[in-house]
Image 1 (cartoon, rainbow, N blue to C red):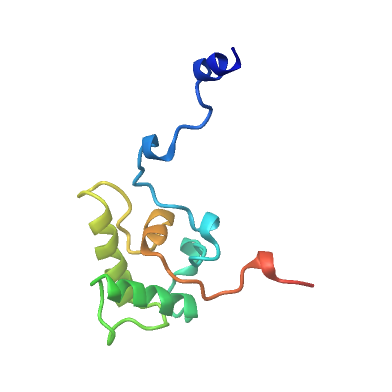
Image 2: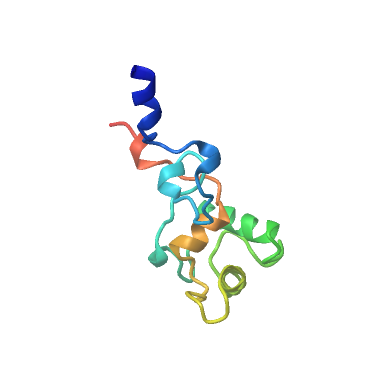
Amino acid sequence: MTRAKDEDTPPTTPPAEQTPATSAPTPATENSDSYEPYPGPEFFHAGRTSPIIRAMSRRLIAGGFGSPGTLGDSWTRAHRRSVTAFQESLRPKGGGDVSGIPDQVAWDKLHVPPVSASPRVREA
């Protein structure tokens, strides 16, 4: 009798093979050890020099959205053009932010490796 009751009760979690795949990016906050957290749009301005920009540049270059001679660790118009091209590759024409300033979705898709210390691991 217990066996019949268990067979009639639907599982609370579907098996992994039945779970639909999603194309949504995994937020960097969930993978803080895997990727650099999104620094926000205000981070990207002329004259900003940072290892975060250098790491982002490397990812853009690896994806074919820039060249080593033009993208470095200081934010320039070349970075903005490269990010615009990357954003356009993610979205249909006119279908979202293609400003050249990384947005959360583009940042998550870029998979920038971690370069800064996470506030959660800092100790007093």
